[in-house]
Length: 311
Image (cartoon, rainbow, N blue to C red; front, side, top):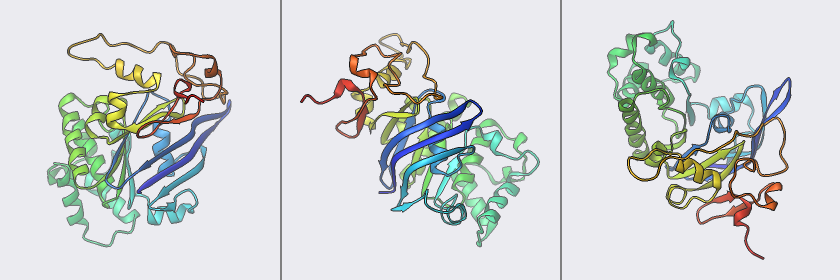
């Protein structure tokens, strides 16, 4: 088992009080598998990725994150940095331009990563191999970020995440703000990396993109993973009302008109004592006023009282 997340919770500390960004997140991921994380903005998707990378600023993470049997949260910062960060676990951050320094060439920024993580091999060779692996020509290494197109910058950021040949990559919205053709190129690139044995966590609003890449899907809402299971089960037999709402909102060339989920997400400043989807759910029952349990499904679980086993 490559990654095991148990009872993971995370809070941000603000002047208005703690924000309960993640609560009781649980899932497992095998070597070579890809996990898709979906949900609307501010549901905790990026916080989950940052928690695994131990880059959660201004907050606190509790629970367990095990990678190849080793507890990541119990390591000191220096030990995690020396052994895991960027070498075994790396991240493609949301917003490529924000990840690149405008005053250094692309080559210099690759060199900075290699120096930071004490790489002792041939700098030029590994940079050349990595940039070619994302279908870019070596001539872009002499350029500055502003001289590249959006698609090129995104592939540069992906190449940086792959530079030290990590085992596990977290991709946070890697296709956001790109046109359809460039999105297709990035998706094909991720597919090729997966074929080569890379283990992924792909964070996205786009369920259509996740369906092409992810073996497992986690649906996030209000800081919780309200449903988790195989990609096939989530898309063909969704259980949670929120998951059903997300799938019904996808535009289709033929068939039913897309629907939207009425209402707004819950405030994460208050720790809820009931189902977080209660104000927007069309199937509310009396028990929904209590925190829902995790009920096993064929390949995962769902947080919903509607599926409570009969006694």
